[in-house]
Each structure stands twice: as C-alpha cells, then as structure tokens.
Amino acid sequence: MLAITALLLIINSSNLVAQDASLTTKTATTKMGYSVLNAGEKIVIYKYYHSAHPPKAAEKYPVKYYFVAPGAENLQDLSLANLKKAFPENHAFHDALDANFKEDKELTRYDDFHKVYKINHLYQNSIK
Image (tube, rainbow, N blue to C red):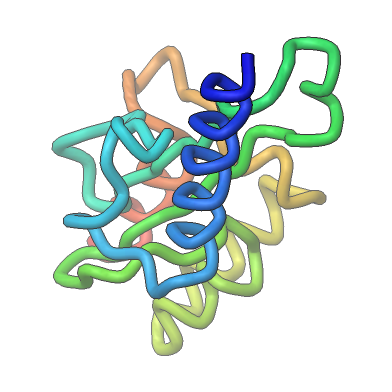
C-alpha cells in the first residue's frame, strides 16, 4: 500500500512539473497526460487530464486545454487573450473570436459542418 502511495506521489509530482515548466510539443506527451485533439489543423489543441488522483477528486482537477500556433513549439493556455496575442496583427481573427465566443470554455467547440475545430475555421477564413 505504501509503495502504491509513493508511486502516485511520484506521478503526481512529475505531472505538476510538466504543468509548471515551459510546455512544448515535445514535452506534452500522452505519458504526461496530454493528448492532441486535432493533429493536422493550423492551431493545434492539446487536452490535459490530470490522472493521478482518485475518481472522486475529479472535480478538483478539471481538464485543461492548450494550443500551439502555426510555426510555434510552446503550448499556451487556450484562452481568447492568448489566441489574440499569438496572432497580434490578425484583427479579422480577433473580431471573429469576439463574435463567436463569449467565454474561454467555448473555444473547444467543434464545427461539424467544416469538420474542424471552430477556432481553426475562423483562423482559415481570416487569412484568405
């Protein structure tokens, strides 16, 4: 029992280190709790799930989302402010984000018609 507890503490602390360190596309691995939601799209979205906790504590460790802008390696928190910072000159994209999303939690919406995440559809339309 003590060995299991120690193992869970090690996994937990390594996941926390991954959270605190500068996350990159190379360090955000499945082993660390990260999964890519949309490989091949321009703005890649990562999902982080903290798995080193009992199921009853799930509400204490909500799923977190990150993104990587085209040509970048570092993951950033998926938020309206960070998306705008990642594309500072693309005002059409900023306007589209404001028109389509009221809160950060909406940024993971999938566009069933275009078969891409909504932020990617808006981004593609803003660069044409």
